[in-house]
Image (tube, rainbow, N blue to C red; front, side, top):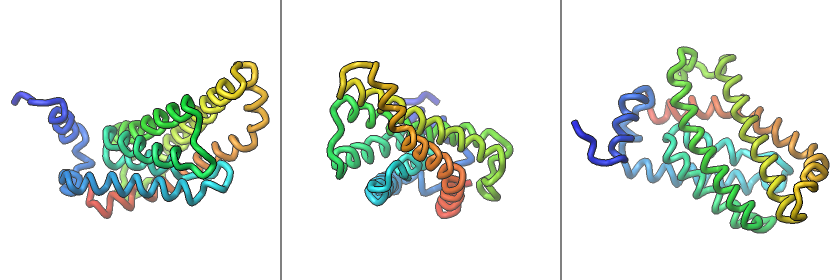
Length: 212
């Protein structure tokens, strides 16, 4: 049967290649739209709730979770909407335009990566959300993913900030070294979140939505 549109093609690939994640709820457009709003709201609320605690956040984790549950496209949408709201209305003020653009792109990619990670893990025998996700291979993969996402964000955002404020790459290392205690906290916090919180949320949502 010939596929009429790219959107339809994606749906067919999802049903054939990601059959383990199928649930009647996610096939309903109205429910998916509502879920997009819920994930976006949760990410923003958690972002603001922890905004005054230096470098401790669950914002990244929620966007990644959205992609893991809903797929690459919807994860990217949640990343775009939540990052735009959170960054634009940040209590500390709006980021300079180059940094603002990077933050949007970064969180779009985080949501997209969540969907990619789901596709990857479902091909592995050790991925059994109906039983237990607190198994060594899953935890190692999630830990590395969380660490890489956080490290990349901190390095690139510091680099852009140095260029915007001082206009030279030479200022990057002094700024990065001074902020190293904060970036270390950020790295450790997100890595631990991906290890201890993310598997629990994945299992909970799989159970609530009857994903099989």
